[in-house]
Length: 560
Image 1 (cartoon, one colour):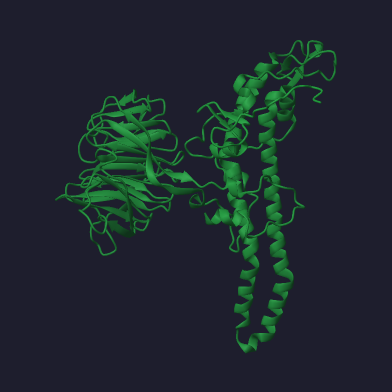
Image 2 (cartoon, one colour; image 1 turned 180 degrees about the horizontal axis):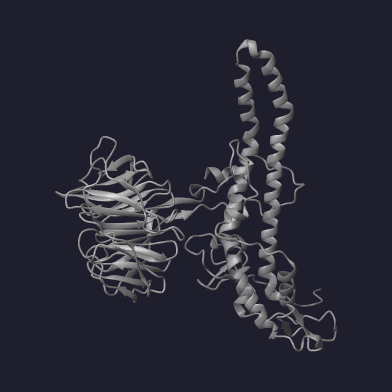
């Protein structure tokens, strides 16, 4: 007999992406997420800046009141900013201090830590897993490499046999164990670092339920400091490889090309008729120029600021942006000026000298140097200046004495320091001319093996060191590798109307493409992150855990 006479059914809310149980919620795209989908969501380049919270915060969940440890009959209601302590109404010693409502203090502190959490989620934990995969591979490949070295030494001349035997014996007994122990030690350090970061993230996510506990935690605990690059946090990974130096997270380990570029958004820029050049300030703010306009705009297309008196003929890449966000441009007097970030102060950097006319300019993000393409009505050259406008180098001829450039139009720099120039040559032909940082000519790209001759316009490089160039002749965006080999037609005339100018965002990995006959800027994604998470264990275990089988997760990640 059923003594209760009840039948209860419980339905658990499912993730919007899969059949998993909902644990998190994205305030930006309004999706329910399970733990696994949340981990992918915060590293996906399209959703990396979304606001992902624990699910209860979707409903503005108010946690239960917490009892004051000094006055058990009272609840914490306030936060003393002077002492950074949660207090109740009976904590009279704080009454003359600066007091805030505890919920206000909690929201303020939480917002201050959100940037750190976002960086840990989207960059640091992801890069840690990539590095950890490489460490695991090194552990497995170390003994074979040692055996290979041993074999090489064993083939030495007979007269050195006694000495070789001594070296081999010593190497086998002492250094083999030391090297493997050192790698294991580095792996344990990485595991402890991961545990610390994950604990910090968990405390942050669960803090909505225990406000006072969170405020005390951030006061007494060491908060991870994420600065310019996640590699600073990962500096404990040193000398892991058989060669010397620090292990770096290679961009090719993290990003891969998509099968087809995807249109992310389109922006119609008010105030320009054609989009001949693009210089990005931040991910959603760019300078756009037409024939006689230079406009600062955002993703709405509205004009934020307009620069007058710019050069209107000869050259297309008339402006660039330095690492401080300052605009550098060629004015109507052929001088190169710098505009401050508040758009109020103009400073002259380089004075034009006859007969050479500056026609394009680019600021190196790695060194801050300025590369200026120049023209004298007969031939061209590239001159390098430091950030103060002092001359460093002139590139004009190849190693045989022939002129490298005819009429430079756009200029950029690759990750390896190569200087890349979109050079327009008369009679409807041209080339992408690439030289080393010091000026030695590497190659000139004149188009794919089969097809029409190249009329290059806008150029840029991406995180994988690909060179992208707009071809005015075929109305395509062509992709070549850093050594000049044709890879593919990234965009064709069916995808965008007469692509003419390019800019690559190295933060979001988005490609901005300007149209020659409209005022439209189209933003594409053609790179996406590799997903390592599904190949990793559910958690990082303690130092006593046995070593992972070499055929499991980490090696598969590297081979994806």
